[in-house]
Length: 275
Length: 267
Image 1: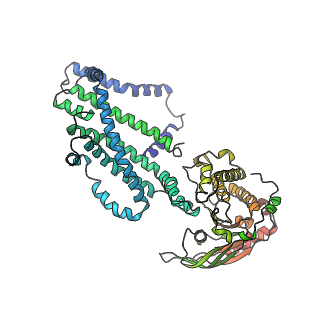
Image 2: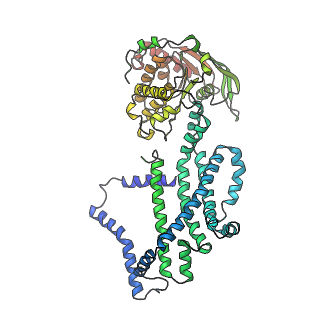
Image 3: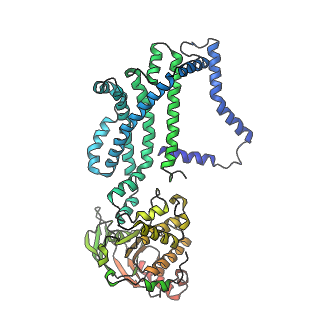
């Protein structure tokens, strides 16, 4: 829902009358500055390392990171590690999101289910999910299942909470119409409640992907022998600092791409919200 | 909306005896859990094919009365019967409701919104499509069948809601201030369109409104409610011939007399 608000604000800003804006040359330089900013910082970083103002054991110069990136990519490990982490995040996401959405729907619809589940969810939700990693390792062992389940648990609670809120904020009039026209129960769930809750469900999905990345990478720190999280951790233990930076960049790229993908999916699934 | 020779059409659509319906409101009362009495001793018999307006100041319980009639709310005393043999049929709804607020689903296109009303009916798909096309044509929205509601104006959205109600072709239509949120010009225009569609089918209509002129121009009888508790103050038969033109009607001397009489009742 927040995203919707942000989108309107953005549109509102760009729609401001233009006659009071400074000359367009300023707008053009502003755009160039935005594009140039990261490169300027990288160049400064490179310079500072080269003149030994920064300790290159901790802050390798960007050129050294790029060099390692190429070596990492050529060995094929880059793709393998990225795909490993991505699959852990996505599998865990679906294992958590599907039951979470269904439970959230039922909690929104039925006050008995809500009365039973509300206290349980309220108690379990605030537990930092990373704190249950040892328990997951105990239950599922060192294999993939422990990573999946950690991501799934984090995603599950977010989806429950967002879906329930989504169902409960559906306007009474939409329920009245369904009653007046004697809509069948199944149609009522799939064509009134679900689409009515969809904007909130999607907000939950976006939050979940963010949390899924955090949990997936964190779980790989100690409980994996592959993946981007493992590479970051291993970079510290074996003092391969360049490799650590490369893996960090890949994690952030992964997050960026997943978010962009979700934004597009949202436009496709909820066309009535964004004209 | 072009409805030509509405008078001729009426003859073809004479209802068979079996479909005659009647709404009996018997001593209906509604007390909220807070103790507020919303409605008291409401007795009303509505005949088949009658257009009845329920008029009253805001907070007189007129919408509550309509909601009770449409089974969306419960009476705390008395009862409402909708009698008629066609009522329990499997391929028909006993009544349809048009609400004041925007009541079409924002996530369904215009056509889907209307087709959704057929959900509980076992009607062949082709027949449903035919009816939806027909109603869209009648309210002048054929071109907007695939539009989402956010692409329509307020008046167009209410037209869709009216089309949805007429498409399922129920014997009874409940309308709760359907044009209440629109500007005056659109409101009078839509009232005219409603009358034209209604002339062709002569459904039994209960039309709740707080607009005196709207009630007089549309209804066969105007039920005037008093405020807290809502009681029937008077039922005024409106003696204008059909078909009516709600704009021309406003020029009639008798129109002004009705309006003044109702004003006096509400004072």
